[in-house]
Length: 339
Image (tube, rainbow, N blue to C red; front, side, top):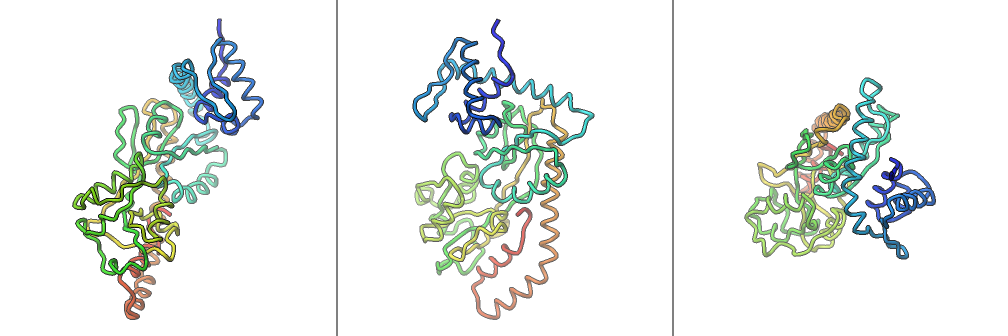
């Protein structure tokens, strides 16, 4: 009888995900020789080659591709058993695998991670940054315990809990004379210069929904892999782009950029926390969702306390003849829901 160990299946999962022995070993928390030895033993027991090794390249064999979903389901069941066994014990401890979309992770995690470390020192958080479709698949398959992304999140296997609303602004070159009179209406010709994230990013679809009145053919016909890249392109006068409110408060707006608001009702996205309905860590997922919402409320309260000071500052700016858009930028930079 073939007997695979849980450890071997976990190492297989890590290598199938990374396709790199060094990164897989780091993901599994072991040395590379230890992981390689277990993979070799697994192949010997199965009498099947699982990975094609050629120089630095690692590829799944056809046999491994066929086995992968079954191994993932087996590991998901084992993790559910472990989670069920932890019920009644101290919550929020041990390994928790959290996925976050790229247009949220850099701005949410700097506040979330210290809060979790302070409240739950025994929690070992493993982070995965990927586009929504990838996170949905990995959460449903049990490779992730939970995920944070923007609605809509359509997957029958997942429970979804809304977190907070994150408004969109328009980032434009600071020296562009066409953007001194916000707010920007949805039919503005400026949106025909909108640059988008590449396919797969939910913010790309949200941008296209906002720009319903713009000529689609005139939109920038190339996409960037990150918001940081888009903002650098805008700073050099190559177009305009959307920027979420949480990113502005995180201090990513350089002097070469100006942030202007859209006309009311301002477009926004709703972020949400999702996890498998059948998972054994549902209470912990709800706890994490409450913590994220709590951070949002704290940021709003801090923003409200600063509002009178900002209003006085902005009045002085207007008397000095500064552009309206610069005053709006001061409002945005002053604080927001999640930073």
